[in-house]
Image 1: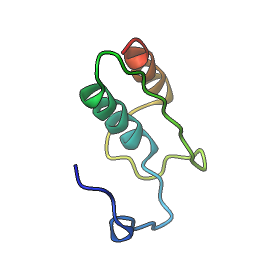
Image 2: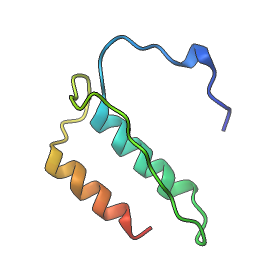
Image 3: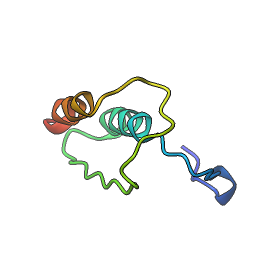
Length: 70
């Protein structure tokens, strides 16, 4: 996987929190080795204004719980 470059970031004042959460958890589960643990840090303004997927806060909590044992 290529490292991110400054040109990869295009902040426009919108937050796709739930999309990022879902993709980040799925990527971590795919890439981690059996003897590794994953720590995720989320920094956000707390309001999702741009997610394409229709994910509720409860669904987001369920996703985190699903990956908690990985």
